[in-house]
Image (tube, rainbow, N blue to C red; front, top):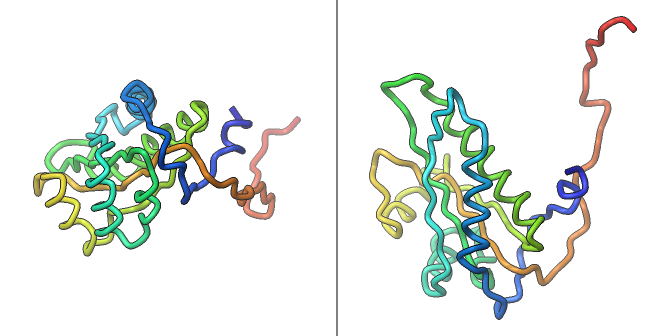
Length: 171
């Protein structure tokens, strides 16, 4: 698993002539729905997009999603906040776990991705609600651009022991 994690990158240039199939998208969504969530609440829905004019419109309405112009697909993660039931307020963590599963599954399929936040930026939410007809009770959480990478960025993450405090059992 560490090898897949090390290979994950934010891809901003895709090969536009290589499609992402429904079967590939279904595998990504299957992985997403295996993510843990508070009390197994699964506060998410997904919109899968391969239609070129919609991918271009995502780039028009999101200032940091320009890679959707070359991406073959995108997944919009839609959060279902729970206000009257337990556990309230955990949808950001739960949706984040689902997104990470998508990103890692994409690597295992040889695909690249870029995760672009929508929530909590209030100025981005209305445009996505309108474009995808998302009810006011739901929150467009993020867009994930997907496709065959046309770049190979260097790894940026690393282990930094100075950010860890250890509380270890006596050995």
